[in-house]
Length: 172
Ligand code: ADP
Image (cartoon, rainbow, N blue to C red; front, top):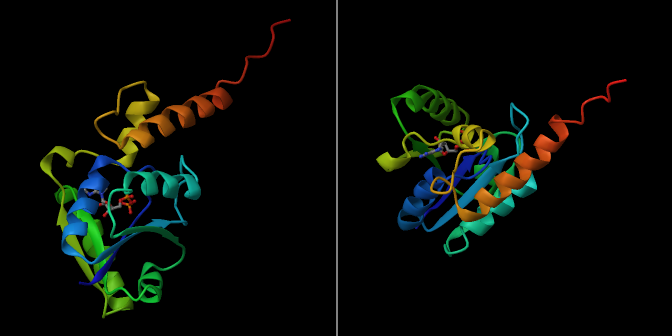
């Protein structure tokens, strides 16, 4: 049974990611969930927090390992001795970017195959970004993320709110 790497930002992990992880555990011998250290935008959660939330959410899966990587994904996949990359597809809108990435990775490492898994339709609208937006505006994300993530989101956002809404200057 081959080992597959499921890479992403996971800022934070959602039930959409968990849907892909569950499917992958049934198909592959080992699934390495690899959290990207390099991100274009400043993440809400640190690398350590994103990894800890994944470890908690994946605790019931014996064949899942949570790790992190920086630099080229294909270099990491080779170093792990894995030959497969898993990506989740939600909608047609994901396709163009994912095709571009898969073809570039194939050019860099022809021996590594990218496998796409379709999410359940109930998660097709779900992304880490939308979960953060809803949570920031006070909406409930209870059914959209693992339990630990819901707790982490409310404390991260209240800590952030504390910083952003700094006390107004005292009127003289
Ligand atoms: P990225 O910024 O690389 O897309 P993410 O952590 O958001 O990082 O996603 C990692 C992988 O999980 C990607 O393949 C993405 O398409 C997939 N994914 C994200 N949300 C969902 C979802 N709701 N259903 C299925 N796959 C998803």
